[in-house]
Image (cartoon, rainbow, N blue to C red; front, side, top):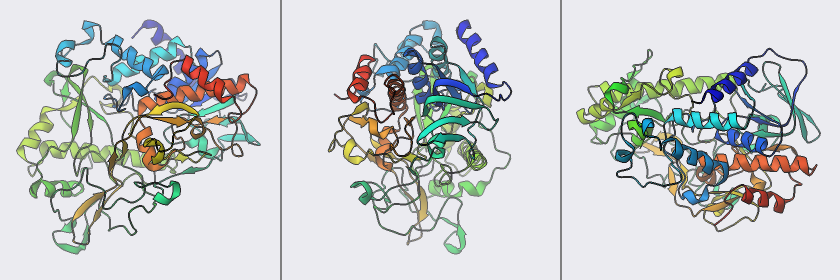
Length: 538
């Protein structure tokens, strides 16, 4: 990393640990949440000449982009422009240098892969961190680490305007416009903005693949009949951990459930850079009994999906019936306080560590599967500040704003096309499973996984701003207004970067025009976005 970057980040860290002050920090724009979308929002504000501060509750920037998801999900990459595209161009330039390839050559990596001579969409987590840090340092954006919004008194409003936000430490921040770029939407929620958690019914927005999906769940599904009772064939013994009774209702009914979270593990097959899977101190074999029975029933597939990144590292995702998705363990996360979320986060970590150890070591796991999980394991030189474990839980879905325009399945299929585009989505409508239940016949089944194709489509500006009667100086580029199933397409890291930049541009325009975020000139906004390289539609 460049020395100037290190020096600048050291200053940022010093800022973050200063004692509480009585007078508020004052900026033109406050960005709360250092996710990938938060980084691009802060950089864009600075490039447009406005003062901005980026507040990140943890000690690292980039969210999931630096937290393990190094194999970018997007679909049609032509949909990505602006600062988001610049990020991937910087990744490409980084890997042009031969010395950056320490465990394989650039030529060998691209031997069986498409090579783009402008952008690169796979990368090591540490490289993504360096690129984001450079972008922040070059833009001279002050970063405040380790400060969380006070969930009881964290948002002060006058009418429909936020005047200041208050951290748990007592430190306060004032601004003309605020941007909530968190995965959870705490600032949005505490500002009194409407939001939804869970799956809407199909009737809510005139959709066909929202809500309960009992019949439609065919992906990542059990392909063998597996008994889910603690004692085989004995319903009175109770259900195994993670299995619930058969849900009531019909397909398309709304419910409180959200798609599963997991960790995108950074793994490697290079012996010199590989460490064995640790066995958790509180390992509970019963938690994985269903997995073991699934193997014994005849499903001997390797239950994960390594996606290869440079230097023989992989971004590892969920796959098949029982894998890294901690199905059903996250339903209380979106509206939970910090202690509830910390507990859920820890449960996900323990579940995943126990799962990996089981797959690598348990004698009831097929030998071929055990060999695979010993051939590929944790990477020693990634997440060195967190015992080589990802610093970010994959919060695939939490709160979603309800604004005057909610993106839906109709947008993803281009049945309905908005004219106030501030960016594009292009990925499948993708929901991971939401629950694992026992059928009437007494077998385990997953529910909720949907993968339906889309056509690249524009995303409405109205979906990233609240209703005018609720808040007039807040923008929400991550927990934006979208139905459960359309959010499954929108919720990709490159799109969050696009939305972050567009939100920042709108914030600056509202300051220049001396109006609300709802009152800005839409044509001027789009012209500026196009000038800055954003893709608004094909």
